[in-house]
Length: 90
Image (cartoon, rainbow, N blue to C red):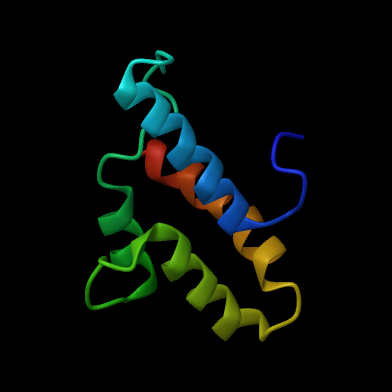
C-alpha cells in the first residue's frame, strides 16, 4: 500500500527514509521493524561471504539464482517478509 509497486528496492528506500527521519528527530519510530543483525543473518542463510551489500541486494541475488530474472523484485519482496518473520522468531 505504501510502496506503490511490488519492489524490494522500493521497500528498502521506504525503510531507509523512515529510519533517517527518526534519526533527525522528525518522527519517532517504535522498535518495529527490528533489523539489528538482519544483514548478517541473511548472509549466513544464503551463504554469502560478507554482508556489506546489505539484506536487499543479498535477497535480490538469491532470488535471481532461484527464479532467474522473472519478476525478481516481487519474489525478493515476498521472501523478505518470510525471512524477517523467521529472523524474529529465533
